[in-house]
Image 1 (tube, rainbow, N blue to C red):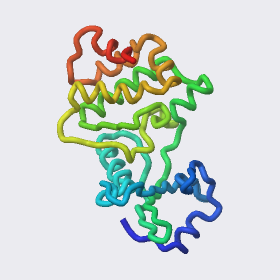
Image 2 (tube, rainbow, N blue to C red):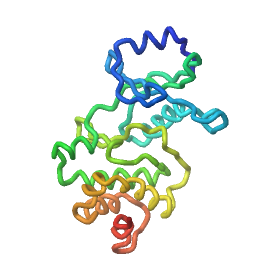
Image 3 (cartoon, helix red, strand yellow):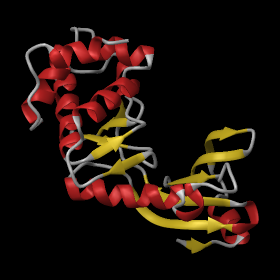
Length: 215
């Protein structure tokens, strides 16, 4: 992580489009050259973000996903901007449309749930727990592959996720009404099919479907 002077930050954001903001200021910018700048504010004086900033976590998580062959953003730089008390990650965005965007325009294919199940199983077997796993953070690339974005809230461990961790991750994904309706349109059959095809963890008949159906 390198310090970025206020003048350099202002030059970088010149002509940028604000994609996301809150009462504290800008959060995500699309820069004039098409690349993105994501800004992070430390919410508490004493927090894990002081030792391990979210911008650096984002960058480290892209490297972890790249090792697994999962498409994700490409990092340009990681910055600390002292004058505005922000950390930032500068990156090439992952091209494509999120699954939420595809659903809203009725552009999804039947096999997409199977591919998504396979992606999730691969992450879980590799020890990746992506708390922000939802259809707005899964992108279908122009090549038809599935990748991940907004990955600061992701943790990796050496061992595959436990059954409980997997259930919790599914619960996070299914808490969004629109996502849940699409994922479980066939009672979760295709999602479970893709997951089982890839997962190294055995699931008794019907148990994975039952997990998905839990409120």
